[in-house]
Picture 1 (cartoon, helix red, strand yellow):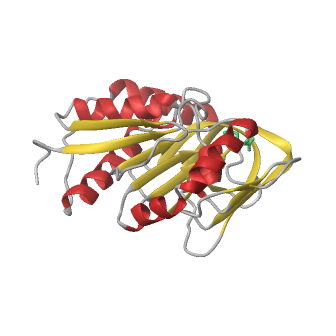
Picture 2 (cartoon, helix red, strand yellow):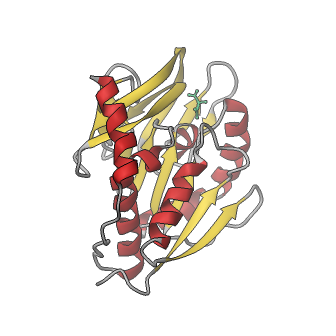
Length: 244
Ligand code: GLN
């Protein structure tokens, strides 16, 4: 199928609470890369208390522990709905604090454990140290294989079962600073510690998510047309070069 007369629905979950280090850039990138190809976007911003109808792609950003508390409560009310959507192929991208809540729980350093929605078989426990800095990682999911971004977290994430690492870190700490893993995925659910923003600097990964969302909607693979990514690739390459 050609990328003509196509449409996808995108929901940004709780942007007033979780939106650190320009995470909104991820949503802008998704919207623009669709718009540039003539793909129509149906876009919803979901706030606390809003019902969540079915969408092809969900984005949830990062935030401080305090904001995560409010979101965790709300997200949990929608757990069954979002699990059903995961199982029907909806695409999710969670960054840092949002990623942590896509797992089973986040245990802050002090304070109550926050329940996650178990879209990923993963859990997070706050450590004593903060991981701050640029990250480069390699993934099998896209070409080129490098992913770049900026991490700032004290949560240490551990993956289990069928949930696989999104990438292996080549610079930086990633999930927990020990096992070299960065981020996670299961079905079409992706989590990463990479702010930066992530998708503007990794346009190949943005297209990968758009293709999955289109496939979910239309039930067949759709190859996206090429865009001129000279500037995006420069930003990506600059971080790769800096790391070595
Ligand atoms: N509270 C989390 C942590 O520090 C998330 C931080 C973030 O989203 N940047 O681990």
